[in-house]
Length: 216
Length: 335
Image 1 (spheres, rainbow over the protein chains, first blue to last red):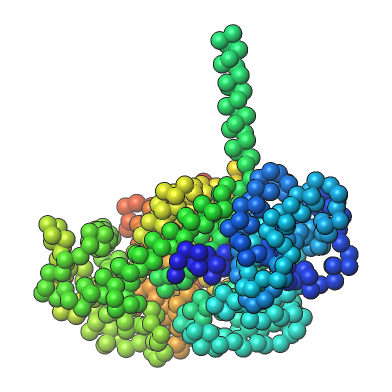
Image 2 (tube, rainbow over the protein chains, first blue to last red; image 1 turned 60 degrees about the vertical axis):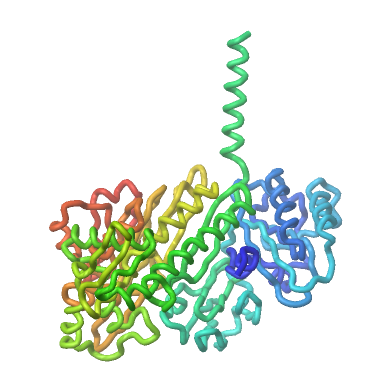
């Protein structure tokens, strides 16, 4: 596996508040104003097919002080299939509509969006994300097999889900907003001992099975 | 005028230092299954691409060491040695030679409580295989296997870095040392690539370099050995490792007895004095060896050792023990 493939499939810190959960939830109807200076949680995400350039642009944006944090978490992750690529800014779990903003912050984001030729329909893009910690309850559970999302589960589903991985069957139990591996046929069953997913950013990996479960 | 110039230069240097301190940093984290366990690197750096590259090469380094030291695969250098070294000098890489040589030194120093020739016992208990033991262990079989355990039956020829087994049936298992060595080498790679603030977790053995941020050291948790959802303690570290041996990762409970993967090379049975033993040491290779020795000896056995690292031991009854040396690492015991 070359360096690029490795970085895309080694689960580089997948964590809270993904584009998927944000778009899927009702926050679209209730966007946050950019001028809200009290907000302190953010996620800036680019779904792009030009990941190297996107990293450079987002990194520069952060270094120019627009995100107001000294330490910012970074993650990147491949997305499977045909997906609408875009640049998304989320503040305190609410989607910010920067396209209508007249301030410098919004204009900067629009510049980056334009540089990356977004929005556009993309095949197997990469999700690049800069974000801060988030202790919110999980809103969405995603299951990833061999680097690709294979299932999205609601934490309220109170059900069990079975998946087949490289080492055999893996069972995920979802109960009262928590998710946990309840059965696995992998060798050491380390995934079964991992803490349940309770808040956004938690994750469980069954590496022998090549399955990862993320809380968003 | 000269004084004024120096004053301005000083101001410039001061501002520049401050700017560096407050430069935006990015925190990246990646995991990979290597050496039979999960390796995770978390790093904080000013440049995302350089950090990703450093992490990639650090993982490659662990992969490289796995190819030398692992018994999981037949193609590794140690597997070749195990198949061919009886009465036959096998020339090996200086790196493997060094690991084996240091292992023997640890065995000598700690009276055989660490012994890399436990391979036949490892195979019997099966905790490193797909089929760990499921029935009551047979003492007669274990006693018969103990005849094949003994690091003094390894002969190393320094002149041509060759190894010979002096006894048939000898089998080296580097599982008790290789992970610590890999942590040391992966850390070296990270630093050589210019990333100085990072944490590497190799299946619960952890090395940290630098700090998480200007004001924060890396805070490392020690798992509770009997409750997956709890932590036993936390320590704050900078440029050192916390290495832990526990009976809770690979085990089988048979007829109410917990049989696990850390056994005493002298008895062939799992050591039962402790549930978990953690030591703090900047050299992870030595640290993982010592965490096993501390685990085997338990709190009461430590007085037989001439040296004492900062330690945190949970004995077989779940009682915590630690020494004064760990105080400087802000030990917090979680009730």
